[in-house]
Length: 422
Image 1: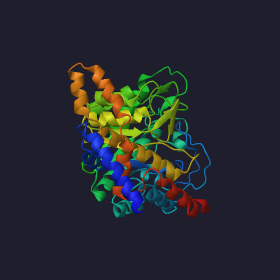
Image 2: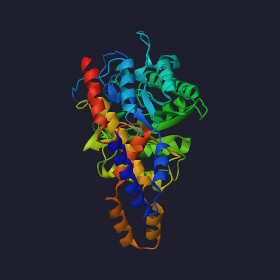
Image 3: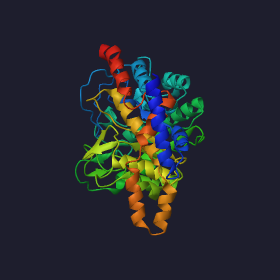
Image 4: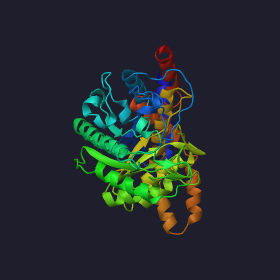
């Protein structure tokens, strides 16, 4: 398609010249964008179902709505869907697994007995595709989590079960990282909390701290495993009190040298994680971001090009944090094509990063330092109408993936050929 290719190249050249007038090198912006790996969450492809066949409801304050056809029912289907999504996203990325996606050959294996061998197919697939893998213990959808408490449970037997699960998952994460020669971020999130106001806020948090100490007791090579802890403001069934609050995990991460996971949907609607990044990075070596889109509550909608997404990307670039920050997606929507959801979310995250790299941030900072806030505001507004879309299409085309107006056709064809037959 000579006309198409010529138009993409011509539009890029025009955009390149426009950005050059602002002192921005678009080629450098493209190169820097290509270096950022985004971790795609496997659970978008099957509505967090996993492959345990335990019959347990999801629970833990999580809920997936919608009945769009084509949901993955087997590990091979899920991997095929991920392959399709990744083929439409520019750059080299990662995949994020939950423990309930183990493949046990039809045998019942309790979560505290999971081994790296139960994820060997995932490791082999990731190696063949040149992908890194991340990992999460699954502290929900289980009989021993039915009352909404796990690592903070008052029953020492139940608490010990989940401690053992956390330990098993760290061993799995370390094995994944060693096999793929890329550190596996193993992220701990638990649903623990109360629906109504508790009489004792202190004791559950003491139990959680002690449980985490046991989970993290065994050291692993950081080249194989990176530990993260994830906070939350509230969830279904834990509206009044969450044991693992932001303040709790921030303190724990600082004291114990863990990554703090900031999820874009885990705070009050008036809070944004873009404002928290520079604050926590003063005290932490590295952090994990779960980029999502909460709508009134932590509903984990597909990531769109919101002001907050752009602010997150700008903070990462302006603060020169990208070597210390790991980016993952976390949403689930069964009301639309699940493969398209991955593609939309990941492309928007990458697109926001590219737009951030196209900002003349040093010029903006200098204007701010000089107290010229008028010029700062005017330049920020000018950037909103700059032709970053032309740079994005050129990046996609050079990466061998469809440009913005073309990728959906490929997903629709995949739906007709594959998803509709499930």
